[in-house]
Length: 217
Image 1 (spheres, rainbow, N blue to C red):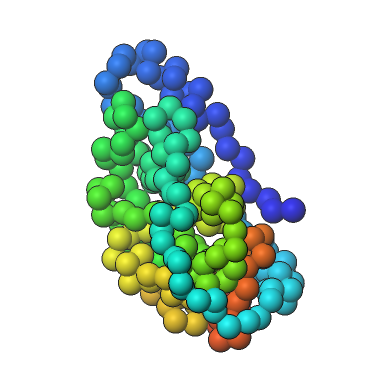
Image 2 (image 1 turned 90 degrees about the vertical axis):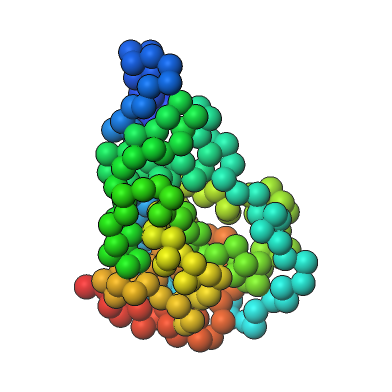
């Protein structure tokens, strides 16, 4: 069982604020849960990693991001991206279309502070293309949609656009966060997502995840 931070009823609070402030007013998302759901402990992550199937990457034949319908609607005009922007930011305000118009975001990958939503990407901890090569090529579209919009587990995080684009679809043996202070959380989260969705790893990927877990205090 994965323990996540409690999430308050954001939609109810947002509706109440809208009633008080009136339509079109930019309002603070003070009731939003903060931070990506916490991944399991290092001990659990090591156990999960040991259970993952090790195999060569699957072919990229047939892959398309469109096969992972992402940024699905989450209610109150908010899609997944806007929910994560609100969740991971500080002092985030949104317009009546749920678009973030101000706020501050700390990118844990590279320790950058961002002051505009346009500077922020929502990263899939396990990238869509990596998931495809690890077993998602055999999933239904509905399962790929669930994976691409997973707010319950440690799969989505707001980071700097620069770090997200540097990462691309690479696995931890090919890319890891510039901030080594985040390696422990990154390895725990990556391992847990792969375990939850029964995705495979390569041997170099597994080896690197083990060494990153070694950085956990």
